[in-house]
Image 1 (tube, rainbow, N blue to C red):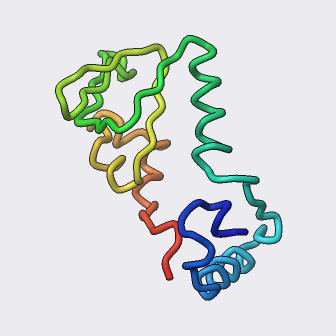
Image 2 (tube, one colour; image 1 turned 135 degrees about the horizontal axis):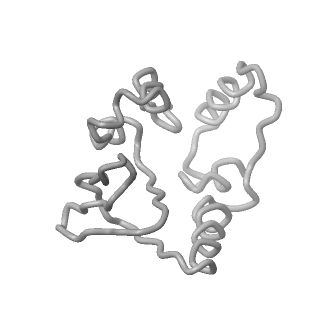
Image 3 (tube, rainbow, N blue to C red; image 1 turned 90 degrees about the vertical axis):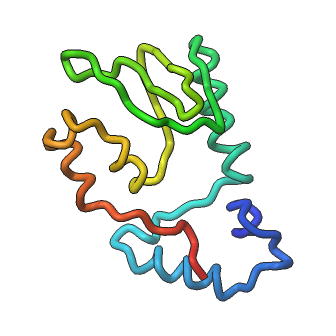
Length: 131
C-alpha cells in the first residue's frame, strides 16, 4: 500500500527492502513516529487540490515550464519570471517547485545575501527514495 500511495512503483514490482529502508530512515528522526501517508497518489490527493484552490481564487497554474531567470524590481521584489521558452510570467504572487540545487542557481544575486536565502547554502538536494 505504501508504494501505491506514493505512486512511484507498482507494488507488485517493488522490493520491500526499499520500503523498509525508507521507514527505518523516517523512524530514526526525532519526530519520525508522526509520519503519515496520503490516501492516494500525490498528484491527485495533494497537488490537484492545491491547484484547484489557486484557480478558484483566480490564479493560474502553469505546468511543465522551466524558469530561466527571476527578474527583480528596484525594491528587490519579483518583477517577473522569464521561462526558457522566452515567455514572461507576471503576477501578484509566485510559487514554483524546483529541486534546491536548481533554486540555488536561479536565485537572483540581490537575494543571496538576505539571511532567509543564505540558509539555502546548507541545503543539499537528495533523492526522495533511493534503494
